[in-house]
Image 1 (cartoon, rainbow, N blue to C red):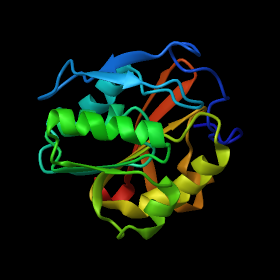
Image 2 (tube, helix red, strand yellow; image 1 turned 30 degrees about the horizontal axis):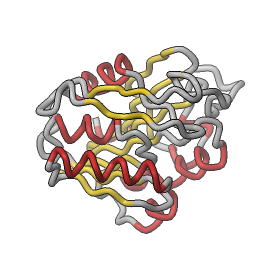
Image 3 (cartoon, helix red, strand yellow; image 1 turned 90 degrees about the horizontal axis):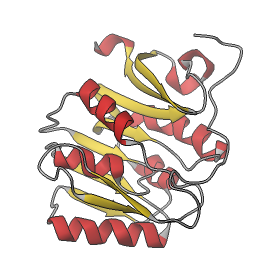
Image 4 (cartoon, one colour; image 1 turned 30 degrees about the vertical axis):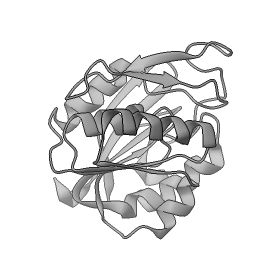
Length: 208
């Protein structure tokens, strides 16, 4: 990968459906397949597209039974609910925006999703207080254009991944682990691009 342009969050832009046009996406696999997920009209909120989620969960394996997952910037819940739908043992979804967190709780209750925990809090504060190596999959997809959150999340999230686990990161440019001290000893095992978004699955080099 090129090392001349470090990974950065995509430039700020409107949500996928356009500003002022609330829309829905759907869970694409598992027990809750085709369940609609409302997407609020909030700055920086743009859910991971269906095609990207399908690719990601193909990489991870369609069945996530027994895995512990952390979605640090839950937003619409697209990644967290998808993981739970596919059998994850536990999913912690962190979202600081009150309206978004309320919507996540409502859907959790509707689905009777006992494996899901919703934390209405700052993702970075939560991440700083969690036990090291306690999750099998950690999703890092901060709000569009929030460079500070992106940088801080990359500093915290790798320490939360259990041996043999995975770190998923969305950025606006290809991610080079050598450009981030916290990713020393990590490698990108999978990488894709959809529009302006680069998405990556990382694992520690000695975990393969």
